[in-house]
Amino acid sequence: MREKISVIVPVYGVEKVLARCVDSILAQTYQNLEIILVDDGSLDNCPAICDRYASQYENIIVVHKKNGGLTSAWKEGVRHASADLLGFVDSDDYIEPGMYERLVQALLKHNADISMAGLIFDYADGDYPPRKETNRMQKEVYTQEELYSLYPVLLNDGSFIGRSLQPSRVTKLFRRHVVEQNLTLWDERVSVGEDLQMVFAAFLDAKVICTIPDYYPYHYWYHMSSMTGGHDARYLEKIKLLRERMETISDAKAVYDFRPQIRNDFLSLAIMAVKNEIWRNHTDSFFQVQKNVKRMCQDASVQEALTYHTMDRIGLSVKIYIFMMKHSLTIPCYLVTKIFFTLYYWIGSQKG
Image (cartoon, rainbow, N blue to C red; front, side):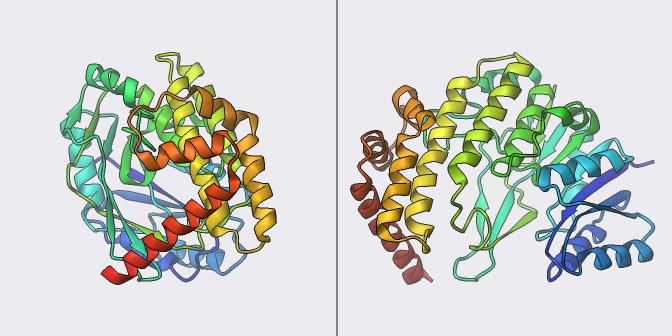
């Protein structure tokens, strides 16, 4: 009897693309699947679509709940899952037919706790070609000793966003225990880096992890109006919460001092927050944006990270941002960001 997989799909506000997602899971070559659709209080037609699928397929379970965010939906899905193997798919994405077949084969072959593949960014606006996200962990199998050897560079290797850990939960298949025993460590308030807090905790409990090199079966539907693509006035507060939760997980596991890497990762995200404020804020005036950037640069957590970071493999552009932010040089920050992104998107349009 083939091992059963529970695939957890959080659903909210995706009525136009939900069928594409569910149909891609139903089309898997690995058939012993349980699909759990967690309706997170969606206000569109998603609840009815979920119920219709459940009435047509015996292996689809629908859970309706009050809106609580992505992490709360994952938790609810895990509670309703009956399988020992857990997968996650976001409801606006889709997967290729052989994904779970290959993930379960790799996991069973190596007696692993986590198996993982790669993903492709599909741009919804069609202005850019699909882009593969490179997984730095390219060995076929990592024993516990080899996983320990990754700890010094797991969350930051000294470079900008230098994570050796690929944080996407959706490209992975998990043994239930590495997920279930960490549910209390997943903070439902986290809305930036939800995957990172989840995968980090599971990674530290895994004895063996295996990968499928150069295999990209997960299609991440990237749209510029998403949280990652649009302006978010609360981005800095959100990444401060993520930092706090990552430190809490690190302290709870007590296997390695990840705090310096967490600080570096936070600084990388803080630089992105400043860029986001300058490039994406089309609502506030120029002067208000300057005030917002100054407030972000002078934030105590940001100044601490700017002062004590240990990133020694960063390029000139990142060094310039660190200098400008440390000294609250808001106008140079503004000009550099505007020039950079204008050139970046112009070059991209020329290639297209």
